[in-house]
Length: 196
Image (cartoon, rainbow, N blue to C red):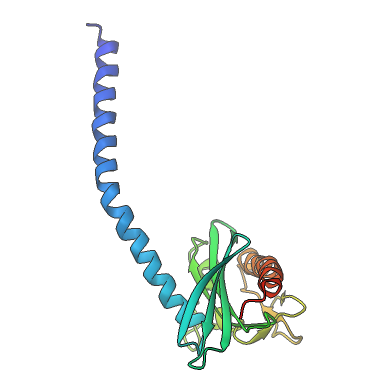
C-alpha cells in the first residue's frame, strides 16, 4: 500500500469516528440548548412586559408575538424578537411595547458578540459604575411613534432620541436601525391582526 493511500485511509477513518462522536453528543446537547433558550425566553417575556401576569404566543404573518395580559385579561403589552446584523455579529433583541405599539416598555439584548469593551456596551457598560445599563435603559418608555434616532456625545433632546455609545457608534446605530425596521414591520402586522 502506498504511503499516500494509507494517509488518506487514516484521515478518512479519523474524520468518520470524530464526526460520529460529535453527532452522538450533539443529540443530547441540542435538546438541552433548546430547553434553555425556551426558559430564557419565558424569563425575558416577564422582563419586557412589566405588569403582565400571563402571556400567550401568537404567530402572525411569520412573526411570533407574545401578548401580555393583566389579571383582568386586558392586554398590557406586546413583545417580539428583533434580530439583525451588528458590527461584528448578529444582534437579537427582545422588545416589549405598549398595546398601541407606540412606546417601547422595555428591551433586552438576548444575543450579541460585538467588540469586547466597546460594542458589548449595548448590554452593559462596565466603565460606568453608577449606571452600567445606561444604554439599554434609554429605551424604557421611549416613544417610538416617529422612529428612533441617536445623537453622539450629548444628551438626547427630542422624543425618540437616544445617546450613542462613544467608540461604538456602529453597534449603537445597528441597534437603532434594527429596532426601527422591526417595530415598523411588527406594528403593521400586529395592529392589522386585531388581536384582543
